Length: 294
Image (cartoon, rainbow, N blue to C red; front, top):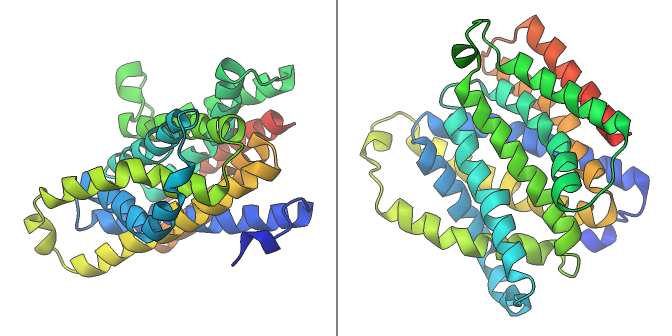
């Protein structure tokens, strides 16, 4: 599929791409869960980064020439904050929370896109956006709350890893939109993995795979991680970075409106239980995201 043939100036194409991205990223949570059945959370994250680097290596080599002194800092930010750190945070979180809950909390991305834009990139917001931000954060606390009145015990700490990851995504979206305007989506995506892919590969060389090899379907679960890397970290990120060029940061980040629906669907099919109250809190978050985008 050649991105040049997709007319992203057209609203219909923008929404079609948004739906496609939601399907891919909504599926990523269940793929991480499958990988964690055999491998540690650090191994899953490292494999995801390394596989992405390998898939993009031919393109990366071709694009090295576009790295300049004025864009290398932004590329490193996108590489580490936009890709690497969230990869480890999500797998760490999913060792103790369901994939469906991870997908729900991922919908906080547009809210933190607004916050980061206001604080660091001098974007403008309205009072309605601020109300949406407060509603979204309230919904997130509701999702993470386990009912204990003790504030230190009441919040699921592992769910907080997802929140931190969405803050990273908010930084990533703004950095691409405002600091890497002169690079194509393919150049940004391929070069970003150049800084973290080799490090992930070195880590994997010195990690112990004995526990993983003793689990059933460890090769199948490795294949799930490879699929995760190819679709969620390469194809989807490439398309997403291209979408940012033609839309606002908040429209692009609104892919998280639909991601929870696919994450919940896969979670239910995999036997996860979804509480009715969780649907209420995700509705609060999504209404907040709606106001943020107003």
